[in-house]
Length: 557
Image 1 (cartoon, rainbow, N blue to C red):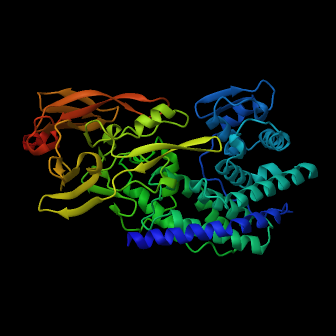
Image 2 (image 1 turned 90 degrees about the vertical axis):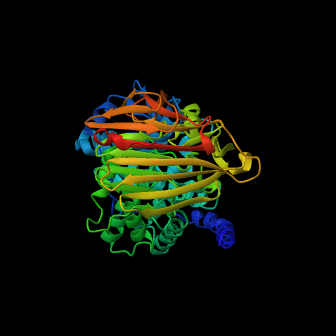
Image 3 (image 1 turned 90 degrees about the horizontal axis):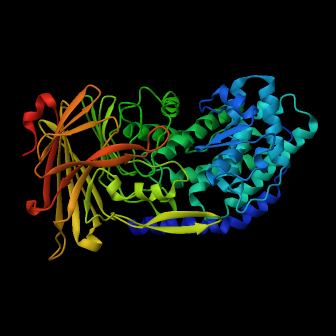
């Protein structure tokens, strides 16, 4: 089956390469539209007070604030590439629209016109990256009512010509596999233009077909993205939900897989959702504003059956009472889509109600590359770490001013089985990420009591070849910054978070050490971690438990 799938992917890649010249020729035929029929709604939360800051010349993106002092923000050397991407993506136009004032609308037109007229030459300008051009196109289409209402004819024509240039750029980008992870956003922008503008029925149908093909390629049957980052479906849905409505408004038939993909992605996000509304921190997931997820779930089918597993994406969920356990039980994504993926196989997160107890460190914001490499290591996850090694090998790949560090080796066999006992729900897990170098398989069992009062764990290393053994291994349990940990003996730690009190026990020595939480509001936050030392443990077998304090007599032996 793996050979058949690889062959199918090879045929698809060859077909895309063969269509490359077609995209280039098609791009040459794109002309500026005369009118826009619909404007896909921007459903991201807007803050009208940001409009006042922008009018005053303050542009704040990705942790950097620039005061323009009367100059065009597009002619200023950017403080970071991430800042320039955000500026040139124009998502911030929604704040000016929310202000609902003529001054804000005039400012929006002026800023868009400045960008169109400015020819700032920065080396490898991020404004010309495929993902940024696609975002700019979607932003301009969504905010076209405030840009074009009351505009003079000259601006109207410049704006339409600029839109057409974006579309020609995106069509040429579809001919390249260099940034495969950008292709879906690119296809969404092309489809949005096709259904919104008078681009012609032929272009609209081709753009719809491109989107359908990329949804098939990148959205897995369970709704996860092929890159395994939980944040990706959130961002995609914020664009796909308005696009679905735009097709309906025009009375057009949407791509075949659009409706099914939206439903599957919403179900997937429910698998990864904690009781406080946040998503589990796996494979590049950082802090996502909770309002975004709430906006998406407001479009969900309330009658849809709850889902516990996302097997194609590699995530599993245990739920009982107020307790939730979410596990990464998947192999790394294909290299082309692994730029954000982490070496966290079999790591888990654990929450009780609105209190998050065990987490992974998460991903830092864009631009913090050194921290990003640290966050991707196995040690930054709540799992077993052998000889301080990561389960994946990550190497740099560069191109067009962007260096991307991809996973080039990692677990190839990851097993996950669910079973129920008379008193608990269990997951039996294993991965071979340490076999190649150390000859060891990591096996993990997680068991959540039926009433959610206890979580039991069993971790062991199993030799796969003669002589394979290690004594240098630890279990790491990263605590949410709100959790207070107090040692209560060599093998026991008491944990408190909000109104939740837990006792952690293990069959080996436990230490409370420093950790860092990258997914908090603003900068990284100091936190703690429980470290269970495996040295001297018989058969490399560790047993542990979390118990509500009133049940602590049932801890691990």
